[in-house]
Image 1 (tube, rainbow, N blue to C red):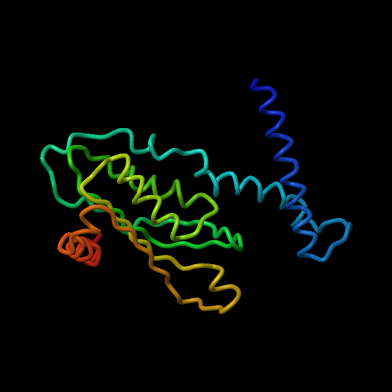
Image 2: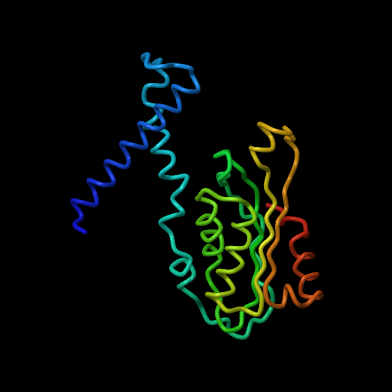
Length: 204
């Protein structure tokens, strides 16, 4: 398809999205056709601009992120990146949830740069999501692309849909985990991983 046609489609889609946000703002304000107050006049455009960043994960690909690898040089221990901060959006209520992820794998013959693990978390977080899917997707990508001895992901997050509505529990934390390979099959490997994750942070 020609770039000109693609741009026309994107511009039209963007225009429809702005109209939809305008309708939503009027619904919230109980404004049926009147002029929006000054602070809301450009809100639909601002929301769409922010969404382009918040949901930028749809344009990323795990295979590209994990493509650049290095020789493991015989290292066969756990590679763990913990306390990866993330922000995501609940697909059920379009409310935010945020927390930290710990991502681990045991290499066979290749390792990835440490930033790639954080980028993989961001890729899945920057979509309409649920926590369980993020957790499993990251672990499965590590397993299928790097082909390690094992992969594991543990996520702790607080959810806006729990804090702002419904049961209104502001302090609740949800924990999810996904274990593949030796982390699933071997209790000693799993215990070692959990001990590493629970260690005190390095003093900065």
